[in-house]
Image 1 (cartoon, rainbow, N blue to C red):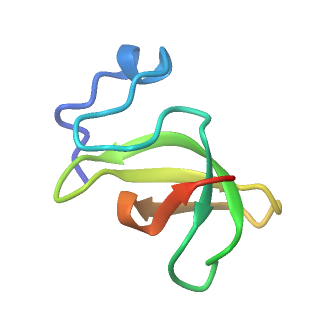
Image 2: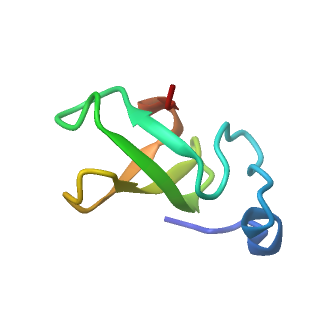
Length: 76
């Protein structure tokens, strides 16, 4: 994965990345795959292409996942 185009200063200041819906430390819900329905927090953005891929820390303590933007929804 390439971090090209990711400005870490902007990211850690709470701005989203180009094409992404989520920000650093934002609460999210996993909507696809074996972890669907679980809540977590966006820790970092790892790649922008073909869509943003985030490192998400699961709130259940089950660990971290690399998930594309399309596999996540805002936590409500």
